[in-house]
Length: 290
Image (tube, rainbow, N blue to C red; front, side, top):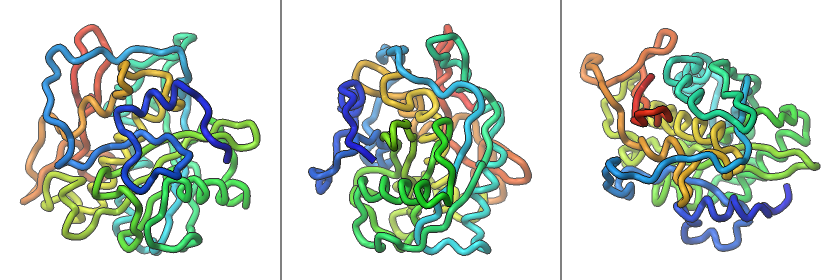
């Protein structure tokens, strides 16, 4: 993949500058900060999220999951994530329809899991960089394990034994884009936070599926996908400082309900989840689940 050149994209990530150790990274990434570093905020008087004339992923969107590291097919955590993605067409996802593109078309409430690929530590398991995440995506496409899909989003999901520069110190995940043979490819990174620091990416260890790591990854996936489809090349829907729709509602879960000793806020398919709200872009903008 080639170096990002779009000035707008570089400006858009001023809100989430590269973390220490990323000085050599060529990718401009937009991150979801960990819970403890998310700045306290009031939505009263917050700058508007406006359209900057760039791309919006209108219509159907394909999702490709790249399982990096130790993700056996029998993994319960993997099942939680795939079940969520498969049932993502929902009132929550339909919020993204309030972000039209330049022609007036909107993101469809028709998003699907289009492919999966297992990458067992092709670049090792220690201190992966942003650029290496891009390399994982490039390899999956160029090896024809996954198709080159300009209307798809590729998510690299690292297992709990893989360390990543910035993960759990600055962020839970990120999204970006890059060029491959003249095509714009959208992709993101979501790490598995299972372990003593899991509450940096989920507010409670009493998670609805009994797996805090898997449930944390689900909410981060939702965050990154919502931002990717409405601001895929970082010049679509955002504020003047680069804040995107899911940023506005990070760590806001709206109305919740008890599920045994756990907390959830939505049911998709046969599972319950705890997913952050998203920013409804209408005459009365607000964070909501639908």
